[in-house]
Amino acid sequence: MRHCLCACVVFLCALCPLSPFSVLAPVVEASDFFLYANTRFGYEVLVPAAFLPQEVPTNNDGRQFLAPDGKGSLAVFAFYNALETTPSALLQERAAELRREGVEITYKAAREFWFVLSGIDGGEILYEKVLFSRDGETVLTLLVRYPAVQKDGYERIVIQTSRSLAFR
Image (cartoon, rainbow, N blue to C red; front, side, top):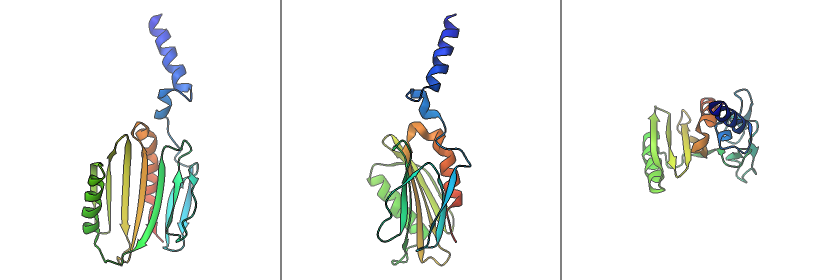
């Protein structure tokens, strides 16, 4: 009887939106994305439809989107590579900058035209993908931040957005 009562309590807690178990639920469904396209820099990315777009910056370099609960965010922006930096040089610079800010880098990957950094910043997870245009003149960044306790729910978002990030 006691075992059954415990199981019922856990089940009911999982259904309650204020339950500590609710943070484990998926944030969005895989099909609930829309295409954000930036005309100034000619790039696009899929963004969760439930995320709230923030004000467009005056230079139109990108956009920030906030999760419905206000705890997570997704930002995408681009800039001209006026200093003609390389992907490997920018990777080293960003990794050093994140470490100085107290981020513990837990994942790093790089290819010819892109790199990814991910890590823990206090109770948050940071995921950053940087993509260079083929001519190296433009740099595009996707930055996703979310509470570490929501990792399972955000995994789908990170995969979908990072795979879709592209210059047109």
